[in-house]
Image (cartoon, rainbow, N blue to C red; front, side, top):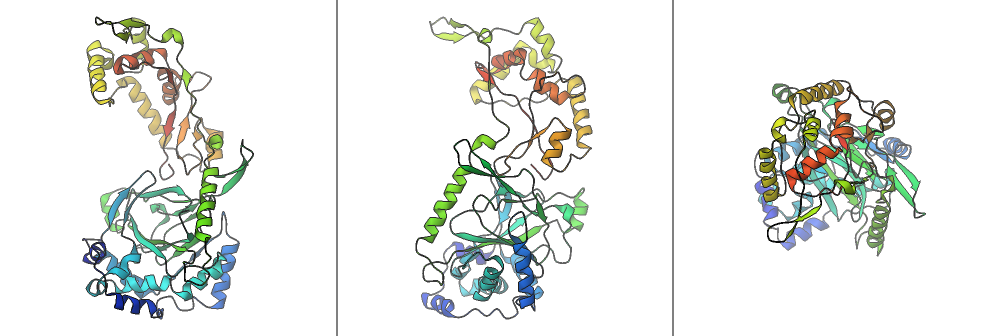
Length: 478
């Protein structure tokens, strides 16, 4: 973790063992002696985990504590920290630090493998026939491939997260996470980083088909813990989950004392058997992909998506009348701000942005860049009132569930969670009054004729319609 690994770079650059050595390794049975904790495979433990899995909710899952031999796992963590390079990755669904695919370990030369013996032993143990049979017995998910290994090391530092999804890709059958946080600094639940599972509801669609929609609230939270394995069957449109954001400590000193709050884990999947393996069924992978695609398409029905985007047309009387410039070309005359317009806008906006010179500067920047960012656009008086209101609201925790939030506040919860996650505030049918400046912005300033006129002048665009929505993001939830 501290430096770029020559071992991983070796795999990246294609340093391969000889075909003879590789074939010899593949034909040699895997020795799992000393890999797992003593007694793991006992019938009593198998029965206990199988019962736990079968009776779990919101969908079938299980947690095994102290899965591996502790010494082996500590050695794995040391090898990872000293030899494995992590790449920061951030998309619209996650922010993490990730290693390369550990399936590539077989492609390393002998010198590189010597640096990662425990990691290689761990991988081989997890995909060994003994453990695959154990996982098959617990889950009842069917035969698992030992040929197709699929795992990587993910590191979540404060600020990292993974949003809601169902893990459905290709031939995946079981998803698992083996946690490797600092074994000498027990992970605390309030640090975040939990695996959270979401229940689903089947709802009738307008087309007569059933749509499966995940709830806006998770039903199960599984905090990280050293040497803990969490796993579940991958099911299209059902196995929705996320990883809670890892939170920053109040001070850098506290975060350092807590080991940096580094959530390290090996994440991976067991796949359906591949050709040549016991349990292989020709065409099964194609059928699984077809089923997965169908469920995902059915789950994209937007009738249960909220908020709804409903644009309000601008009245024809507000639209500027076309005029002709000196060359005879048609142009729009957006006019100027009248005294009454300015009086209204001054209740909310900084006076600087209402002067002709500033509006012209904004317009020039917008025409050149097709975008503009304006600092301190609200007046000092209104922004102070807005800040005080927001700080007051944020000091009181919101209720934990979507139903409670919507019953006790003007905020609604965006749903379903695998598409978008935030609270939203729509224009109300009654005046906001002086108590809620956020609602005032949504009800009065932003949808007003005066603001649309200012916006048209500032951008040079003709406003055809508008849709106003306030958004609020909850810590660790949105």
